[in-house]
Image (tube, rainbow, N blue to C red; front, side, top):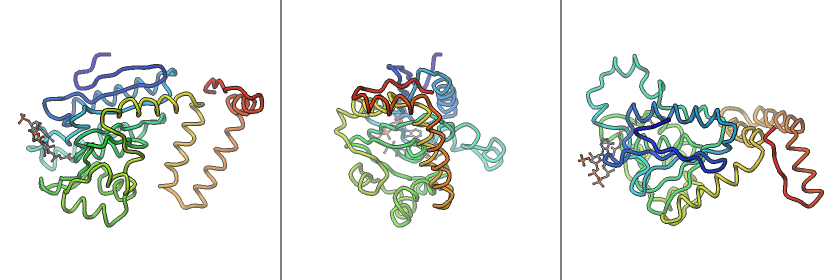
Length: 258
Ligand code: CO8
């Protein structure tokens, strides 16, 4: 499939998606988000893909929603078409892991898009911000919720209420990003991470993702029960037999993803 606003490359078991609107610092528009939905559908359906990597350019992951496109939007337009919920959140329902590799600006919807991914690897030049308050709106694609869960109330409040930028080191210390790497090595590093995840048993990887996400939706007891049932289920996989046999036979496991 040909995309206008995205570049898709499949390398082994990794699907690499790059947001591509260089003249607008990858500002997110409906066309791009529709394409992202289609590309994620494609990668989810492809049995040969075990991990998805989402990135931008060296200068910007994404500088937010396209302000030109939404400036004239009225309340009724936003409400009726269910702006954001309608087509901007496909990543939320991805069952395969999605890693965000962020360099440069991740502002507004760009920061929110990165936070919808399972984890963020940041270049040392990355900057995160929720500047919506300066535009007369609020972070409306998860900024007030996911940022708060990631960095805690004090910092999330300060960032959302002032719109100030947070650099990569601060983001790492605050728990927003998993790791910071030199900008020149970002894609190499993020790809190696995605490739590693993609070699493991896909159903196990999907179960781990579901369990970690359940921690945000349940009490500890309910979360532990969910985890335990998934753990029990993993003993029904051929890959469990293979993984443990390989250990005992002192060889590398070859997972069949079932
Ligand atoms: N929308 C439209 N155009 C943009 C945007 C944007 N968000 N960001 C940058 N651009 C355009 C600029 O207008 C400029 O275009 P032109 O060359 O035609 O003048 C081009 O990109 C390059 O940008 P700059 O010249 O401004 O580059 P600088 O390096 O000087 O500055 C900044 C970079 C600081 C990132 C600056 O461009 C900026 O402040 N951009 C706006 C950031 C912002 O406020 N983002 C929040 C938008 S609102 C939002 O995201 C709501 C979320 C909705 C839900 C999303 C769901 C995932």
